[in-house]
Length: 370
Image (cartoon, rainbow, N blue to C red; front, side):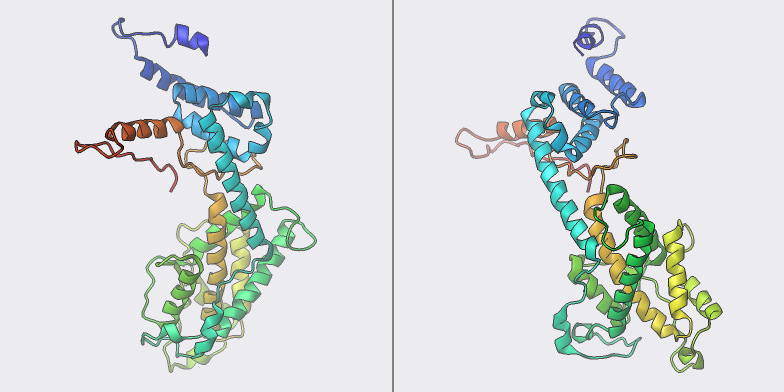
């Protein structure tokens, strides 16, 4: 890179029509990215090289890419001799990001090892009370969790474990180790199922609908949790409401409750559809509605749990074929942006530490991944 400094990045200020240093650096960064010279998967040493060069020339994309891979392989790259030449700021950021990844991965793997989430608060059992489905009175706070929800939640959990025990080819659940590939498969499957069942505009005029929203909010704190589409119930008092459904009839009812347009199906989704059809055959439609609500609790819990380890930087280019984790938090990245913000903030402080009365500069650290 010293030769680059001499021949390419030399001062062009006195030469009319020549690109500026910043323009040349931007073009060079784009060329490196296009030719994939910065691919950090090819060798761990390249992660260190990319970090050093990108920080020197303030190449944000190359630096961020290298940082994400470096945090995932921190234990290894930190043992390499050249790691000592990485700037202290980057080394500190990598160490912090590595600890964060390990904590989140451990929590996610622990939850997935049992698939037993604390969805249903035991305190509701003190207010056991049943209500007719379709009731519009606002008393969901005193309602007990329907037994049908708990039962369908448990049976769906057992079905999911059985399904992935076969897919992952393990003798029993959980697997000895959850690889990144396994986690990504779970993410893709449950995301597809989530999109299949999601109600984009749920109506909250039913007590059970509000109760389900409360259960989901208590689990992850989201005040506006997503809710599932439900099979349409026949009108109350209609003979068909209490009629047990054969396979053909329940198939039509369930199909009408799916988001089929724009939904990318896969083997897991197709297996789920068959699971719902088999359950609904020989039962009244109300049972399928209650079962859908209970299953949605598990779908919501898995999606929420996976979110902490599958959230990767949107600009990440080299992600395939990687078994280490790429979910590094990007707080303070790139470090030169944070340094400039700190310098501006310091310059706006008075002699004795109090902010001057003149118009100061507000330090704002950009968020790359929300």
